[in-house]
Image (cartoon, rainbow over all chains, first blue to last red; front, side, top):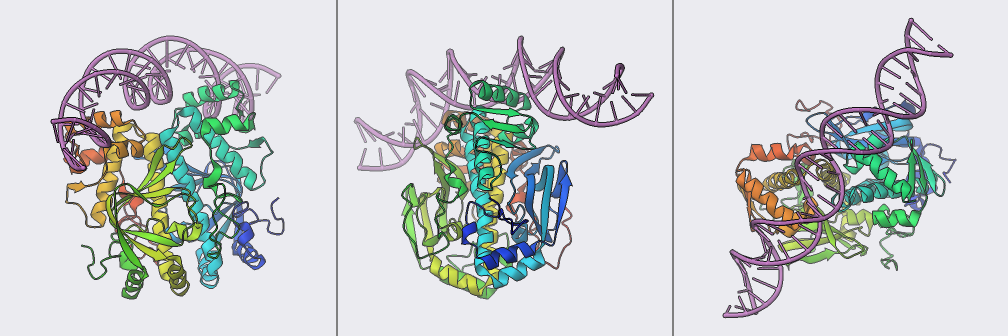
Length: 261
Length: 261
DNA sequence: CGCAAGATTGACATCAATCAACTGAGGTGG
DNA sequence: CCACCTCAGTTGATTGATGTCAATCTTGCG
C-alpha cells in the first residue's frame, strides 16, 4: 500500500529499496516537491535538449520516454509508472537526449535542482538511492534491448504486459490479474517496434490463446504463467524486494549471495 | 590524445566531461585503481547476481554486457570501449542483472568499493561525474532500443558501426576512417538481433554499396555520410563535447540552449 | 596436415510490413 | 436528435525482409 503519510513520494522505490530509506529521508524527499501539477493528454513534460532546472516525480498516471527521428516520428523507448523519478537523470546530464511526455491524465511533482543539490550534499545515502533509481531505468532499458532483438511480435508484447503488470503491482496499482493504462494500440506498436496493424493481430492471438486481453487500456491477465513463458519473462532486472536487490543491498557488509541466483 | 600522465584512467570521460575534472580529481581517480589485469579471450569479468566489491575500469580492449536467457543463449545488450567504467553501477546496485565479459585481449583496472565510497563522500563533484558516466550508458541503451525497433538489419549494423566509430574516436582510438575490434560476425549478430547468416549478407551489401568494409575485425569506413544516413545516426546521445553536454553541463549557471538542438 | 571456428552461399519458409477497405465509438455542430 | 467527422481498431491480400537448413569455403592454429 502506498504510504499515505507521503502522498506525493510514497511510491518512490516502493517494492525496491524504499525500506532502505529512513523516516528522515522520506520526509526530506517529500519536502523536495515544490509544487505538483495535473497534466492532461499527450503533453511533453520535458523536451530533448531543454535545460533542466528541476526534476519530475510521476505521482499518478503514466509517462513515456520518446526519441524523435529526423522525420519527426516519435519512438517510445521507455514507459514510466507512478513513483518513478522520471527525469532525475536530468540533474546530472543537464539536458536530456529524449523527450518525456505524459499520456492520459497524470499528476507530477517538481523538484528544483537547487533543493536536490542541497539535500544530496548533506545526505550521501539518499544521494545513493537517487543514483540507484536511475540505474533501475537503465536495467529496464537493457531488458528492452533484449526483448526487441530476441523476441517476435507476440513475445515482445507479452513481455511488455508482464513488465507493466509487475511494475504496477510493486507500487500497489492494479489488481492481482488486471490493470488499467492510458495506452493505445498505437503506443504498443511504438513500444514493441511493430506496425499498429500487427499489434491488432497479435492482441487477437493473445486473447484467443487465453493469455491476456487488451481492450481500450483495460488489461486482463488470463494466464500469467503462459504470459511469462511467451515473454521469457524473468523479473530479476526489476530489482524488486527478494530479487537481485537484497535487504541491505547498499550495505557493503552483507556479501552473502542470493540463493535464487 | 590520451593523457599519459594518467595511464590508467586518462580515457575516462574523454571527449565528454573530462575537462570538467580538476587535476586533483584526475589524480584521485588514477589512485583509485588498486591493481590492473590483462584478460584474454571471452572471459567474464563479472556475472549476473555476483556481489560487487569493486568496480572495473576498462583500460584497453573491449567488453560486452550480456544477458543469458533461460536456454543459456547469450545476448549482447551493450559494448564498452577503453575509458568506460564498465561496472560502476555495481557500486550502487551491488549485484548486476547482466554479465560483463571482455572480448579479445583487454586490460582492466579494479577499484575497491571501499575506496570509491571514501572518495565519493569527500568529493561530491567527482561523485556527480561518476553518476553522469553511468547515465551515458543509459543514453546508449535508449539509442539501442531505438535502433532495434526502428531499423532493418542494414540500418542496425550501420548504426552500430557509426556508434563504435564515434566512441573510439572520442578516446583517440582508431584512425579517421578505420578501426580495429575483436568482434566477430557472431557478436554482430547478437548486437543487432539478426542471424549470423544475415549478418554476412548485410555486410556484403554494405561493402558492395561502398559504405563500410568489415574484414575480421578490421572496419574501414568508406563513406561516413552514407553510413550515418543508412543508420539515421545522430550522435547527440553520446553527449560528446559540443553536443548535448555543453562546456559546463554540470554548472547550473549556464542555462543557454545549444544552437544545434 | 587436419581440425575447428568463422564466414559464405543458395533454397526455402515464415514473419511482419504495407496497402486498401471497413467498423465502431465518441465528439461536435446544425 | 441526427449528420458528420475523427481516431482507434480490424481484416484480407500481397510483398518484402529475414530466419532456417544444408552445404561449402576460409583461416588460423596445434
